[in-house]
Length: 287
Length: 312
Image 1 (cartoon, rainbow over the protein chains, first blue to last red):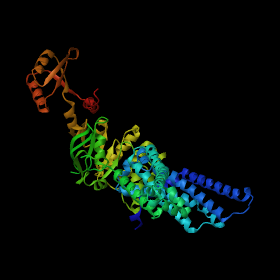
Image 2: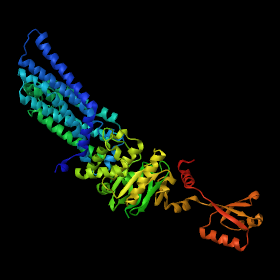
Image 3: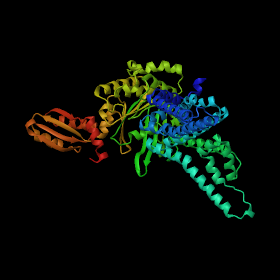
């Protein structure tokens, strides 16, 4: 029964990844950075500020900062882990052999994605003991922590899928990396810029009308840019009042997370579909 | 027939890598595919291995179409590319285990198969060694074992002996002979014709994407070597002998070596014509005491047929 659901690529990738020294050194380095950050944060708030105590609001600030660090991890490490998934096999000349096995393209792509996601989840979970420090001082609810982790999960699967797609359709890992990081910059940075530009233009348009017109804001395009930006969703998770503000500015009351979830699920499905289709030569094309 | 290639063509823009290739092979045959670099051998093998789509035509492996049933074809073939990499962090048995799982073989069956395959390729002693620590010859043999793990009917081996030292070549050849005795149909490519001649039942010569010859080794030699060079030694009367041979329509370029009483000429007639000629020489009482045919070896034949490919 287990064999039926086993994925050879996933098993092999996990074996290779956890055998590699760089995986453990990377994990150790990441935890060291988190430890230094938490220690420094606690020292600043208790020793150097002269207060010698830690308020729940300070604890929440630490939680928010840790969440941002974890988010940065997801945004910057995921492309590195996935953008070479297929192209590196091609460069190492192992792909052709893999493609002549009876494994389906879906199995290969999903195996590659899950192995990368599994390692990232391990990194995120390894940081949980440090996260749990915030519960000592209060200010953060467990549901908030769970929400943040679900947000990470959706985001890293989506980014991983983008990486896998570019890795499949480009021949070289370096090209795939650059393209995937380019997509990251677009999703995390350019969309925020478009959002602010859209909001500013809407505000200018509203302020140019006469008060009698009583215009209510309605900006679906700005809403769209906000919903696909991971930073915006993170802010709304950490500070729920920000969600209300954004909704009132764009004039759409649908929660940001709903749009985010829909967009990233569709993006994931699209990227995986393209990767699966492009992995093997379509024997009926070119005819 | 187990391999049936019908009008296979592959074009890259205006360049034709494979031009209407048609070929049939019976089960259990060891087929050598010879041609210069870029002649179309690897393209053919890539299409047969479902890695490349043909521009037109189709190929059938054990009745399964590479165009319409690629997944079924993959079950029938074991493919070994000319250049391949290995997963450095895997041990030899794990490497085979991974590919066994990739073919859907159960864990229990893999545990039985892996030692057998390692023994077949003489790598039992390297079972728990990391693959990247193996020599090139050992990696080639491991890759061959990998291509056999699902017991395919047809083995497609693209230059399996390339880059190997003489000892490793001999070891590889012995393994292939053993596989032949097991009844596997083997397609093997090389640009070294004599290497294939030893172990192949049939040989196909490809040049510029076209199959220019197909048959057993002797037929290939006959087909490709053109005029024979025959050397005749006579006791005396060399001028009479020369006059006799000059009359034959199949003979050209007669050369007389007086000091050895020897005549050398090109002969383009068939074997039966040659018999008639010798019979006539006996009747005419030409004092011939030795006739030898200057044999072109396969290397010469290959050099001759591939001369056009690179234009040299």
